[in-house]
Amino acid sequence: MPTSKTAEHREVGAKIRDQESAIKQRLRRAANGTRPFSVVPHGRETDANREFAPDRDADDIVWFLIALPIFMVAHAICMKIGAI
Image 1 (cartoon, one colour):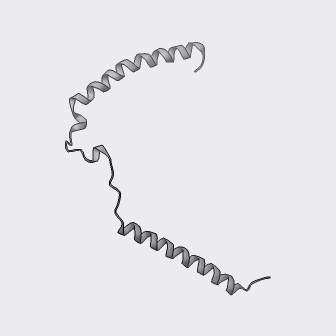
Image 2 (tube, rainbow, N blue to C red):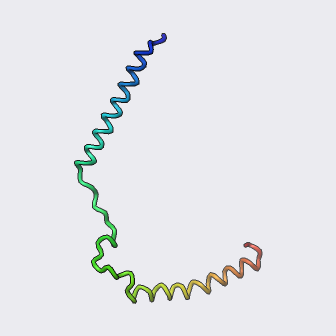
């Protein structure tokens, strides 16, 4: 049974109002609620120059000097067998 255009418009308007009220309610809850505390180590860091500390660079250089030859050997083997 066909409905009139005004009845369809009322239904659509009611759905939109329901959606808008739900969104407003969620926004109010989000604004009034407590925000989660971010647990990020560098966010609580007290020493601003920690990333430039000399002890941080030593481990990176050792890893680089160990990993680079291993990678180069693996790359050469793959090139030799034609995998790359």
